[in-house]
Length: 159
Length: 159
Image 1 (tube, one colour):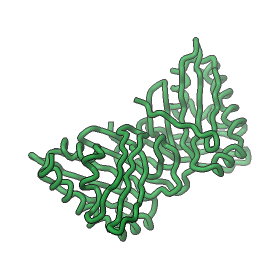
Image 2: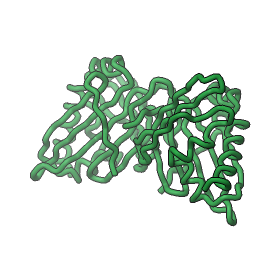
Image 3: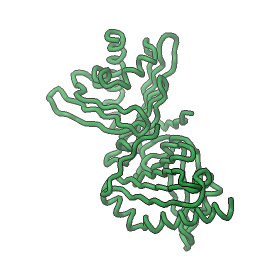
Image 4: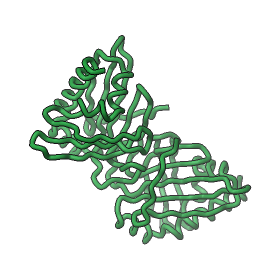
């Protein structure tokens, strides 16, 4: 049974879209490193590495690279893995559940069937208002939105 | 499939005991507030409140009360719930997976059958050496050991 998630508009950010690709393919490109690398970062940024151990406590890491070549590693672990329905991960815990040095957010991806497509709901939970604000200023809405557009295009043209 | 946990002796603390009560009863007293209150804190400290929503992301909270009457609340969430085998919870995440303000440790309780009893392995994962040291100085070994003794006595006399 999936855990009910409580959204707090002061602390959290939500991106919701209805997209014209089935959720099984969304799940596939979110959980396979070779697919994820192609769309997970707003271009011209890129993903140079990605590691996935798809189970609670398993690693989810990626390295994002700026157009200038600077690399930014992210590492966290999965918390819930419900195929085609829900994926939860956080950077508050390292793989194997060890508390991390710099917790920032927990992400929840919920996928609902919508006709032949998918209602895609991505939520970022922060510990305080400063965290939400920082994420907004980093470009949450544009960035996560761009990434969904890239993902849909990738699925339609490459899968 | 349970996640393999990597212990780092510099960062982590482990208490291991073989006890003369079956693991099903250990599980029961760890996951039922009315039972947990009786043994979860080294006496003369006591547990005045306990809330349990036994699923990943669900609340695990307790309030510990000093002999002088000062109360210390703890709140976190479960990460893995494998009945009679493994319970994982952390204070790095609040219920519903929101990153917490003061992450301190993740606890892993592993229960193995051992004859008519149980091999009881309780592990505390910290993010750094300072965290482990602080937990040691708070009395991890004596405290968690006392609590196991209290738990076994409670099971033998009250269940």
